[in-house]
Image (cartoon, rainbow, N blue to C red; front, side, top):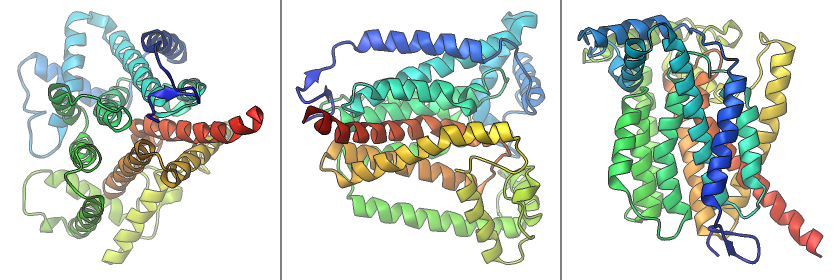
Length: 390
């Protein structure tokens, strides 16, 4: 039975538009309240303002440079420049509203995917509530930074290919997919990772032009190569033969040689590395800490909130992954593999680059984690339903 259907009777979902509007209005209202109504500047905000003002005057030298990947934030900087040009002193409110709107649209895409990927009618409600109560999601709404917008634009290409996995006959939309990839590429540097991930899903699961084993071996080989090259360059930045990103690599090298695992979290630091193995140990530690939810320097309240949210989320996600891979539904198997690869690749990317102190780089992966957890809730409901019917 296709995952387009709910319940044992296989009734086709006919209220898509109504639930989308319910989700959008609920998320828009909740995010407006949770934002606090007061825009806030982050550490990166002054730099973004300076770059946006340069765009307004025609000076893009600070963006188009080989020393940093600022060009990868061109989408956000363009919107910021427009807000500062037309909203006057209210530009921070405009940017906060952009965050709220992006967050509401992300919720709509997430709920739509959950409804199509699960049979339990309550799964989409679980996903929406999980999304709205997640402190990591709504805490960034008032800040003038790229994270909330990037979460949306990074989720759009995922949603487009995920729909082709779980909906039989879902058409290929090349223009929309290409446009979404271009936008995400020019919103945040990690956006470049989404391009090979989309190709992986399309070629392996949708079009089946590449065997799964071949794709798995290719991914592992690419990961090992990236690990070796990155470690060698960070150990000695002079090994990098290009001017492109040279200052950033020097910065990464200095951080890691100080033993940094997470930025500005001294309790996570390791002894300064001396060998390639020491660098790999730091990168491995950083990969694991990508999923960390508590910290000794956080307040008890902060740690408690994180535990209350992430322990059930991770538990249901693991259940969803296990149940999906052990099942016989090809749609669910392909979706679960895609989710695991997507999350794992981004965790690996940040293990090789940088992991900030408040885990905001994990924010764009939370919709995928909630989707996987919704699959776990669906698996629990499937086990409980036959007992109640009996």
